[in-house]
Length: 319
Image 1 (tube, one colour):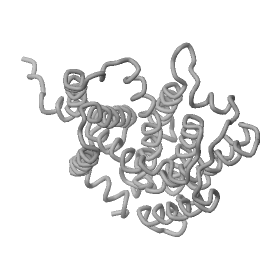
Image 2: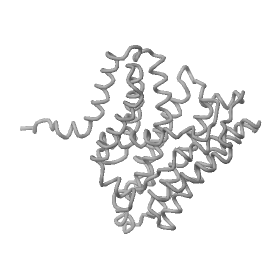
Image 3: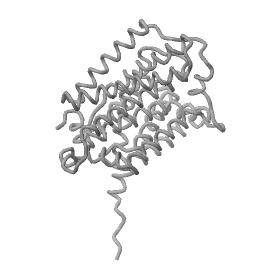
Image 4: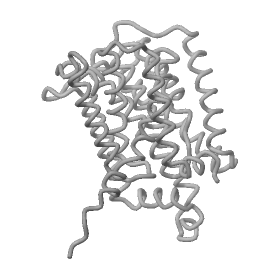
């Protein structure tokens, strides 16, 4: 006789995703114009930045490290990109510079954690402060804006076969991270490092290298978003990515409650980012006060952390 369907396990794995579907249905009925194709497309575009940052943060978290600097690093990289474009440098140079800033910040975080043994919570907060100061130093507190190179703007505003390039960038990033984590030795080593670094070390895995790479990937994701954000908005301000810190972290934490509960995972992060973007858009269309979204975001973070407390504690403090 076959065993009955395990509803408990099903809900533990897919319950949050089902809740997101229910939320979508609610807004479809209660929020006027929510189902308007233009509105849904705008939501997907906004979610793109959130999802890519979340994927980077998730890679650091996979190795049991916490990166709280990615939003400030993204803002700093954005003003570097914007400044170069504003002063007439070729788009390729600006894009390379933005990616390099993100990668260098991630490398700095990794070295602070792996070489100087500073807890990632402290190390990345310090990097965030430095990046924030550098962003304001570069701009003097004034945003770069102007008529920029159309080839550069196409990176964020263009489309391919009718599909906005932002959505394609997000899909490519998600598929790449998924491939690395599921189909490569590097990905498996990163996962094993996050699960039990001492056991991973005894198994011959270079634990410090995995942690360094996790934080480097997070920085690189911040650099990529800096390029896309600057190209989309046609401006670069020293705090352009400030609002993405909690939102991206919440997306990853929310993702850790579904598909692979307790572990940062690509499908969960993407669905989590989409849920947060949908929540903000739906509340605005319903005329809810601006602070309601912040309250809901706080509830999401607390609920998600409650289900993944041990993972986050280890990532933040190495405990």
